[in-house]
Image (tube, rainbow, N blue to C red; front, top):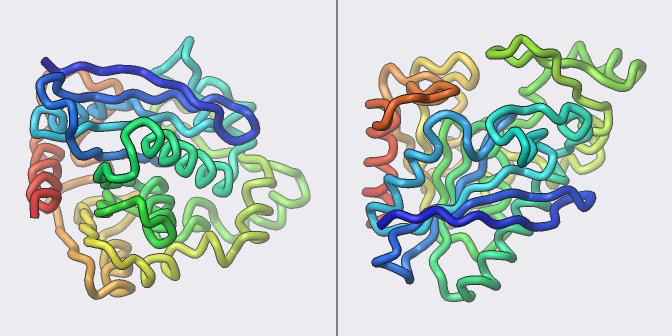
Length: 274
């Protein structure tokens, strides 16, 4: 039987990290797939729970979590509603959270447990940096990953951002204006070396599968090629006709994975089994 257990941890600034572990109770000692969500994403977005069940049914323990400053609360787990917390996020806080979850996995399952990491979009950037620096990760998979954190805003916004103290991004689904405090930009500038995704990509020395759709308007296919060029040992897979989320949407009411996302999962499963 496929089971999903929940957990919570103290993340950056004492904000809580809420996560869940999906697994088949007939196979208690399976390798782990750890998923890191992207910008404006969260663990229960779209088809993420169907993806978790897919990997659990195929012999993996699938762990996903909300970054502590995702703006998603336990009261409203399927939307970004805590805009104050969302606005005070930084990339360093997100990396702190990823490390916190890896520490939890190590403590709960032991140092010998195989840990593979999937990162989507901005979470892909975090996963690349983590994989370049953390020996606990055995294999890296990125879905539509960014190659630079500053691709998330326009350069010409930075002057006003520093002057006013925040900028806003639109939630495409709800049309809500979501704040980003200037601390995000300041953190990026202060830790430019640590937060250089392409530099980290060059240092990834574990098996790495780069998955990228060729109809992605958020992160164009050329971006996946840029990551692959930075690391000749990586493998780039083009998903033809796929958008940024491989045909998923939120809310996702279907009981089966979107065909293109199913294809992505199949390719990841093959890669993990090699």
